[in-house]
Image 1 (spheres, chains in turn green, yellow):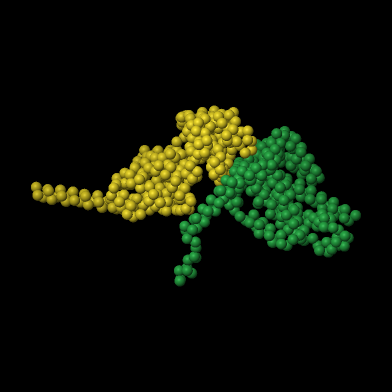
Image 2 (cartoon, one colour):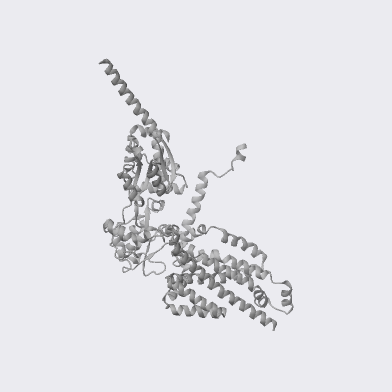
Length: 297
Length: 334
């Protein structure tokens, strides 16, 4: 009897082994039967990614720099930022990281777009229903805490190595903050303001786009910031499953203790993150000024 | 005369006694239990057979290649490294052997091991005309790359591994780009494993770098391809292929350099003829070793479990390594 309390009554070794093997086997047959179908489902994303990467690589570098500076100015209306980004890109190119950087930009911009365009509606949906929130929150918890290779292993089995699994890895990790902060931002909108909107006869759509989202923008943009930072932090992990880009030299550096190589490529990732983020944040601020300003008129 | 006889008998007797005594006393040593599955399996098989069959006392010591080699070389302990991959320690090992500190007890304890280019068994079933790597290189269309299906995909070695450079060089040496191939960097061991497993599970064609003995090779029954060209000399390999395309631009096509694995022992073991004889005969056939690694992985078992499974399932192999008497004792102990 005492034995029962001393040792946890665990499954027998044979049963446990069979249990594990049956899961592995079930997944293997799933992958055999549906793998190709799932793979072709993601093909459009893959084609787009490849197209974007090729476009970035084929475009002469001065044009890329001009476009970057132009986008910076359009987004942030700041000459300082435009100039800074040109300088950064020049340095990256000079240090021989141009091609890897282009590959990384292709992956990260697609990943960020995907995360925002899925994450924001999801956050809005969550904000409107407590039941949805109760359902999605644990999923987000799993996405953020589960060790990366635990879910990458089945993804690798299904999709092989390459860009799409890399994109999935990045998005699984980078999307949750977008969802959470959109949800939070909308839930924090003052009830009185909503009542006022209702009193003016705003329908659901007007209430959402005219009141809730504009007022939630600071939080939403904090979400965008987090998403970008996390996406870029995942570049190295994505390279571990065969995605070209700045992650590959970082892995090389880690494996062989090449200090300078690691530092250079690591800092290039940081520089990209900062440029992406500053431009979008300034853009967000301008958006809010404009909205708030127009409301005050 | 009588005295002489007595003293001779005494001397002889004491000699016999001494040697028996020395044998029992001496057959006690430390063996390295290295941190990868085939090495830990071997160490446990050796320990079981030597302890049960020959009455030795063997202590297993954990360690990786370099650390084990250094302590063996400097401190003469542990006394045995059952599966030492000597390529990485070639120079100091040679020196230690010349100076009589270390000895090779077996220059090939596992057969069919090493690095190279592998394909899935389905590839060979569908295309029996593929005899060597050279045949495969003519058909990149059968190995379409995910990102550019007009090219053939060759999966190289993960970023930063030593073999990455060798694969890059061979990619150039075999003019694979001209033949319509791309070299894919799988990024990590997980990426390489995933890529190979996916293809093997679906029965797709796959051409890539891997090595044996490993459980994945055994699990999917992967086939090592002959390169179709001989090894083009260690000059070409060491100072060109292995240095990578950035240091050497004109590598010659070559088969992969032979990995040398040995059972290395210290001078103390040399004085134990039974043990030396056992190590000399102890050769694992590659496919059996791979299948044991699959068993160990499937059952998530430790080295000892794997060793007992091997001794139970494959007596046809290990009984040839030992004396009849020792075999009986080992069988009894199982």
